[in-house]
Amino acid sequence: MPVIIKNQTVISDTYTFYATYTEGDVLAKHSIIPVDDFLANPSLLEQHPGTIGVWLDSHHEPEALSPYLHQLAVIAVNFPSFTDGRGYSIARIIRERLGYQGELRAIGEVLHDQLFYLKRCGFDAFKLQAEKDPEEALRGFNDFSVSYQAATDHPSHYFATVYTKRLLP
Image (tube, rainbow, N blue to C red):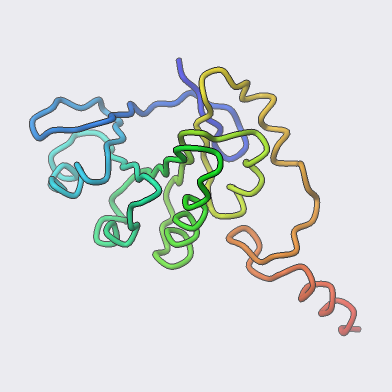
């Protein structure tokens, strides 16, 4: 059975990923479909007896999902190559601006050395390439002990915390 890393633990992936969806296709109980196909048929949220998630490519605008965020079980962001960083920005928009609280999953070219940074942007689940060892990838979350910039996981930056501690008795 395929696995994902979720909340820094390796678990079974209960979702079926669809590269395309056409109205009338029979979906698995837990399904992730392309965002364009979902937006063409958002009534799936009421019609499907299981849970529906969507996946976005790096060129999609996450704001299009605003009316449906509270109903989507998972939002996956595809990284078509490890050099395409637009998914990091999409994650921050989804978490910080749109306030999404559900599972935010990184898919595609997700590498061990990106996990720490992806988590900082709001991802809590990661689908690695089949040839990658998820247990080994878990070490990527501990690559750094301090982060200087503010992010989804730590809203204030490092220096604000250090200076505040020095100024307070």
